[in-house]
Amino acid sequence: MHTPNQISLDKPSLTLKARKALDRSASLWFIIALIGQWFFALYILGFYGTTSINGEYESWNEQLFSGLMENDFLGNLFLIMHLILAFIITVGGPLQFFPKFRNRYRAFHRWNGKIYILVALLISIDGLYLIFSRGVVGGTVMMGGNTLNASLIMIFSVMAFLTARKKKFIEHRRWAIRTFLMVSGVWFFRIGFSFWILINQGAPGHTENFDGPFDFFLAFGHSLIPLAAAELFFLAEKSKNTQVKFSMTALMVLLSLVTALGIFMATQIFWIPRMG
Image 1: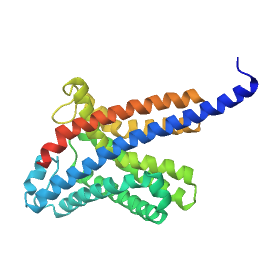
Image 2 (image 1 turned 90 degrees about the horizontal axis):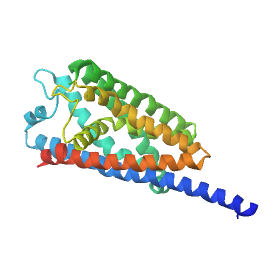
Image 3 (image 1 turned 120 degrees about the vertical axis):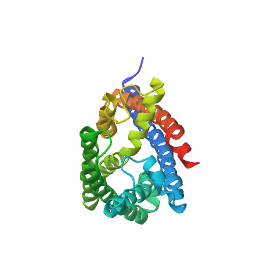
Image 4 (image 1 turned 120 degrees about the horizontal axis):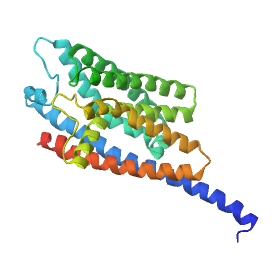
């Protein structure tokens, strides 16, 4: 039987374990995502960089719905900018979330953060221009999903900047995480699609024109599912209920597995074959 003193010691101990478990599950997901994102950046550099050097721009149109077009200088310029900005933000963004790196190199964290916010805004504006000037595969529904993603990037990035300026660092961290997840929308779309192929050994609900039921689900899901997971995580962080923290820890481990499998499949299907 526990004495009152033992009970009072046991509860803080369990709370600490729950908090550490939650933090470690988030770190697990982030490390997996970091590997996947940097591999995506390597693909951007390896495919688009190599084909640009070799003058093989026609190969871009085999991978993009609206690639390089004749007599559309501005659209082509925006497309090239979009790819360059995607590479910059995919490489530099995750560096903001290493606690030791952030604490040791505060000046770098501040300036890299400002660059990250600026690039996030530019890539959103750039993306919206391409969406409405050229259209997207999947039609109106996919356009709506991409527009939502770009809009959320702009809102969240501004909030991340403003909360940092006001030194509201807890709120800033949450807005920065939201921004990071929305900026990663294109990446989430690819790994989500790849995971769907893996578990079904095919792609039910997908069509060549990306207007099937699963395509429409993913059009919005690639933004809303990661955002919902983040909001649940923030609630678990604030909760004093250890069961809530342990439940969220289990969910984060599951999401880490799903993310890892999605990255593995995307690497096999989309990235490695086009880097050769």
